Length: 151
Ligand code: ADP
Image 1 (cartoon, rainbow, N blue to C red):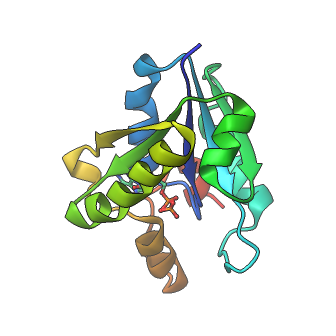
Image 2: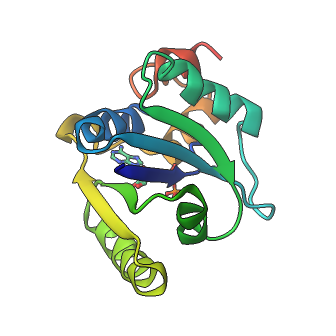
């Protein structure tokens, strides 16, 4: 079975994430959307809420599972028996950041990273931008799925 882990903070889920996940569906038998929990990090949306956003958005999609994890993403992949990590690339900053992580994951556990370039209409979207707009009472409806906008 071709199983991939799509790791992230998803604080919150954005249309950029949704685009990558939907376009990766034909490539894998199962995609585990894995919400990384880091005790030192401050999140805007509580974990339960971030999980709900993802479950609600993909509720009709049987290939998608949602899980939370702590520690190394590569170790979580082993635990889940997933041989692939799925990541999205928006620009060269993402590329530079992802390259050494992917090479390290490959070297220490053999897990392969698979990258999809984001669709151009979503390349400006990040969870950070969404949080900034929301914090300043701006309209996030063009950046996030309906369930997040309604929250
Ligand atoms: P992290 O904290 O690991 O960066 P994120 O939740 O921000 O987690 O992102 C998870 C994944 O989604 C990363 O691979 C990131 O590059 C990708 N991603 C985020 N925003 C977009 C976007 N607008 N288009 C494509 N991929 C994206």
